[in-house]
Image 1: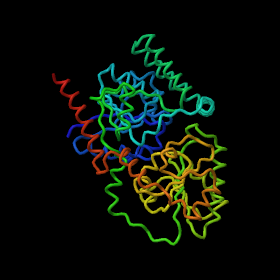
Image 2 (image 1 turned 180 degrees about the vertical axis):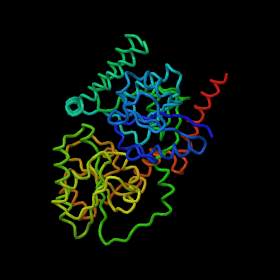
Image 3 (image 1 turned 135 degrees about the vertical axis):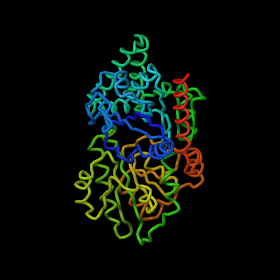
Image 4 (image 1 turned 90 degrees about the vertical axis):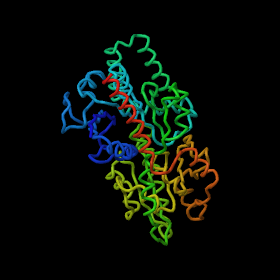
Amino acid sequence: MKSIKAIFFCDSYQYIGTSSKEGFLKFLNPIINSLRKNMNINEIWIVTHGGSTSKVFQENINVYNVFNFKNGKELLEKLEPDILLMTSSEYICYSLMLAAKKLNIPSVFLDSGILYSTEKSSFSNTLQKRFTQIRLSGNDFLKKYLFLLKTELILELGVRNIFKTFFQIFSQLLSSIDRIEVRPKADVYICSNQDWADDAMKKGVLVENIFVVGESLLDPVYEQLTTLTKNPSDKIEILFITTSAVEHGIWTNDMREQLVVDLVKELSKIKNISKLQIKIHPGESEEYYKQLVHPIYPNVKITRLGDLTNLIFQSDLVVTFAQSSALIEALLFEKPIILVNMFNENYPFIREKIVIECKNGEETRKKIEDGSYKEIDKKKLSLYKERKFFKFDGKCGERAAEQITKILEKRENKKKS
């Protein structure tokens, strides 16, 4: 069985396990497992926080800090991957894909999750969020951009291209809080649904390089679904799913605390008819939530890592305060979702009318008490699932792996000829 070295990128290694990925990287597990049926994969992870500072590939090290290398070209020359499998389009990934193109290393962009509406927020709101992000992580932003600039210079891309990239980044910083789009730089673009494919074509990706494979995140759900049974309960099982809005600089810590405290205080008032469990984002601190929540509601179980599928399946209601990939399974299982929109965010789920909007904890409590939390539009939800999930058959990872295998075989044939 042949062996390959594949480079992946993640800001922090906390999501990278030895045998499986956590958090937003979970969608990679079915893809990597499918690839391993036909080849040995040596995963090389590039991170911006933590990781080895070695500049030479070592068999027993698979996580390297990107800033120990001068630029993307040096990194690829030192680590010598056979392929890049990028799951992010921020500046480090952009740098690596530019260098890969120059060094004839194939690159694949993998998109998972739901493509939310590209409707822009107000200019003042965007500036406010960008200012918060820069205040919290401006040094990281600068380091990443300088790494990109050094890569462009060493690749001799020319002043015109360098300025074009700079103004693209600058305009996106001011116009939205979306990620910087770099999809056209990858050789192959693999995505979970037609929405992503259409968006990629608008961004300049050639249609022949786009492959819709379905949501691989749901492959384990498909396999697990037949084994799941709902535990009987005489109370409404509420699952509160948090997101890393603070860690990404979108919210302040005060905003999160205000919402969480308000919501938990109100939910603690209906313990006679409901039971609360909190699933926090893998990037958040479990200890932080315990200190915040347990003085108000001592019996609440708080989980950071765990079987999200089973947690959602056992729930009667999911409560959250933002949109994330964690809600995909809730939509799939047609669980009612209350989105607590305390700060009047422009959430597509609310515009699509597939979740129930509440402005605060009191309104949430009342909807639980009177049973109106169940009033979801099943027809709208069914159409939404059909549009966003493509195929739910447990084979999405296989389809993605098939396309990755093809590009590897194509590279191998080029070497031989």
